[in-house]
Image (cartoon, rainbow, N blue to C red; front, side):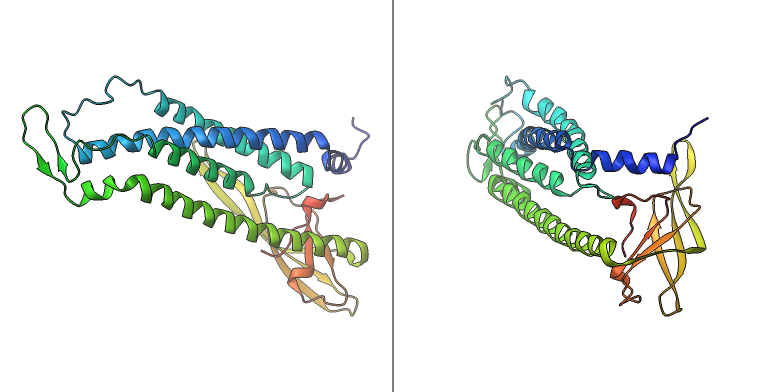
Length: 282
């Protein structure tokens, strides 16, 4: 028999890890690993891209580079696996360090940026064509002029890294926008925890979200509608999506001066909710 409330124990465990410097150090180390693995991934896939480029601008009988072991492509594959592992570790560490419901998007931006740099470095090492505009056949001397793809891939050492750079800028822009939205949500939530109202809510509708995997269909979350009463006695209804699969209670945190402002309404479906349990508007 356990004499400790599991909900309170969970709350204390989450709050204990929030702000722990060991998590911050782990996030920094994992982010550095993500940078290194991202560079390996970009450099390795740049070597693979070079093979397709060479097939388009040169004859299949061009044996330059045939004696070069495919170590770059192999390391690129390991780098991709390392990106996934280190990115998850960095995101998880920051999520627990900040006490947030989901991990930040910046580890993915670091991987994008490092991969772009690795691809660009690889593109500086690509073999030039035997002749510009002609796929030279050094064996049978049946040279063929380049078509559209030949000319396109000939200039790939410039436009491919530039394309990846544009994608990285988009990813950075998205991460900054999401980070600002999250910071604003945290500011409102913390302000309401100091001066807002916390009232019990009644669950009026619950729709389970199902997901499929190899083992069959399973519950992955729920969309829950709750109702609460403001200081003037007016009843309100709000809907939140949650990843919790067992919901037995609900609590609402809101601004009594603006009970209809959805951005200032947070819902928790746990007893003793931690900071990450307060769900904002979608």
